[in-house]
Length: 383
Image (tube, rainbow, N blue to C red):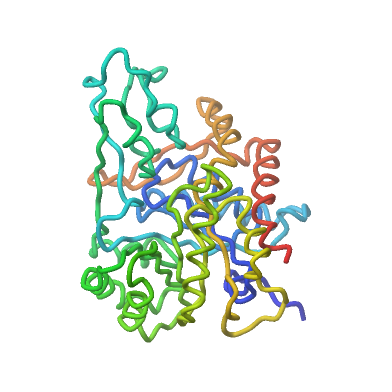
């Protein structure tokens, strides 16, 4: 009998694909439609902000994907199953958990606005059409920080936030998250332990725990300490090696940092799977293959082979790849035929209904989006 698809099989087999929507990214139309396209392309995990509204948008897309898989004979959409839904948390200050801000009234009249040009999320606008708004569109900013050093007047600053322990149980029990990812940095053992104490009671309901950490002095010893804090685990553990955070869309060279850090963590032979992130793009898999870091077989092992990378997470590159299609779709959102009601939780305001652009309502755009997503996903799947 052919084994049914399950995302964890991809992790064991060394071709796990994760889409990172962004720990601070709350642009709900993009979250919804990115989730839909990459799910239909075969993604194994969708990582979204720990925000009930973002989770609701992703779950809506997963439901639509399931319906499309059930009724279509198109091999591209063909019934593989659904990815895990992951939410990201942090134990302290982290660039993934921040928003840029500035007061546009302070901007010199003769400024050439390099911040607007460099923003990959198109979150910085001046006198946007229809609203007259200038500044940072909060929902679209995901904290990459590229605008900070480029402002000639140094007027841009950031607003950071740390995950609230009280929000963890609702995310798992009510929102329906399958997996959690904890962003941390070397030296934060006590902060990590405090956050973990809030997660531990609910970990039995999760399918995966991931720990994301950039490089630093004493990294391996730090990761070993974290493993002692969380052990024993009832589910698989992923070490996400954050090579060069939020940079995959900048250029081909950013993937080198991701691969180098992955090699470092692999060499330590920590319990768990190693998955790359931070600077990943269309060149990551070819670089891994050239360095002999991709698994070459098809055996379904109970533990990850060493020294192979189990998977790759794609964030900014995956989003930018589909952005022209999603931008085209959003121009249609004033037409009721292209929108779908989604329950969105608003802090302190109960539950309201928002209408989001509906990718599946425009078959030609859906097909194009899935084709582009497949061009990235297939690199890991065709091993």
